[in-house]
Image (cartoon, rainbow, N blue to C red; front, side, top):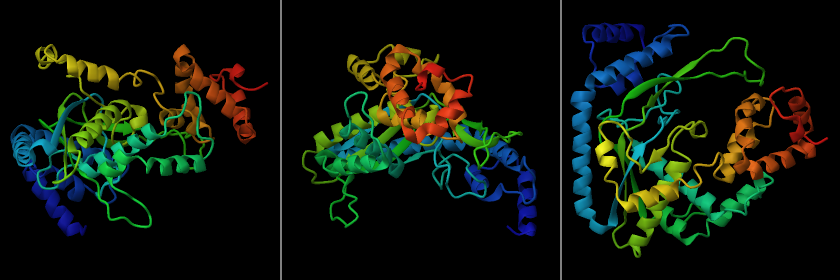
Length: 377
């Protein structure tokens, strides 16, 4: 941005402490040339302040208008429409790579209104991945040995008739079949609170420990708010109820066990059928139906485990068996020592015993936090 324009914008913002188009400021006007190491953090703090200033007025009205639009959409599509209400149970970090003058901001909003939303494309991608894992579940204790096996399992998923009907075909040779389910997206019933969060990289690009940590700030949405996740079947779709039921089941399971957005391996992006036990919601939670409770229990059956599926175990444990991420493995040791994770521990031991991990074994023998009896003699 030319300095003259940048100076004029800065002057205008100083005169008006409130900026209704807070996301325009964040995406286009928050960058300061040669501002130093703290410029991003200060810009994000100002963005949070602008967001809070318009939450009770502009954004709250926008959320109500969005709810009214969804009700109209439901009347139009009738039985082909499905709206699933879930509650965010952990911070949400979405669209880190979105176009912005600041790098890795971590928030996605409606471009016109500034209301945080979840795009339908992101929702569809999350459910597609979950359906892949479900279609390729193996007996407990087995694990794909290489990338080729993962690719073969991905191809096997394409044979799932429900998945093909719901998501359509992504065959590289081309296809005339689009998905029968349209993913509209996720919409908050009320504006969620905006937080300033940080990530602290402990290793440089070569995998060496950093001598001086440089926290990197980003934005996230606080948990506790209700969100409507909306999708519907195309007109003329046969077996629409079956496809809608399957999509809803995948939605509830995936968002409870894996999450949506970035940093899901660190617990971000989880959603739950359960109403948060805040003073405002306690009375509502006491009237949850038996059907809701049963669905909640089913969705969380494997989530209560440290590693509910193979992919989670791969991300949290096996992917850390390299020089750059090895120290991150320390936080997984207490989990692997629990009796319910004995099968996962045996997989780790078997992996470390292979010739490909000879150098990693040498490094782990020098780590005081790694149990020596987990390594082959």
